[in-house]
View 1: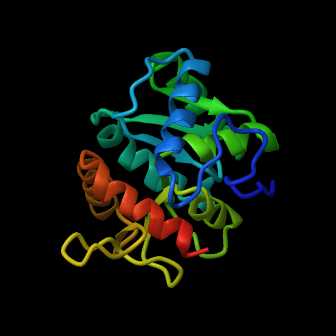
View 2 (view 1 turned 90 degrees about the vertical axis):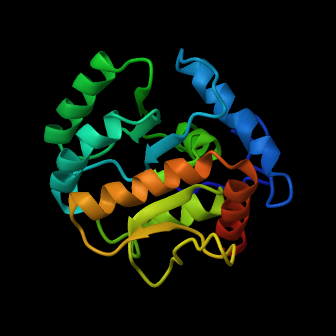
Length: 201
């Protein structure tokens, strides 16, 4: 999957650039409507852009999941990965149909996911994953373990393009998730981070 730039992507509802990030929100509400969810632009929309298997951090996901589900967030999952996690996600879409969905692994639908999502959850080193580049390109803020391609957000200096955690354990990972959801409450700050993401490409 190799999405085009969001400036000229014909598969998304509204194209956008680092200087018109308000248009990205229209892609979010369009996806929410398509999924039958309430159109709530203020609710953080997370994605799992690479799908899931053990090497992508599946065990960490299982440990973080109860905390993630306790937050007021929505989650879209790329329909790719091992059967074990496919079964887990299918059950989650049944019990949380109002806020968890699996996105078909097709180019157009994945572009729509990137265009809509606020943040992407990476539970293993994302530095070699092409999905990281796609996220940055579409202004999807990574929540990830520390890696050279990303800079942790610093609210004092208004710098950084991600929410990073030092250790691959549930406590550090969940702390980064909470920090991201809290920062999302401040639209100016969030757009600043999204702009940094897009400009890092």
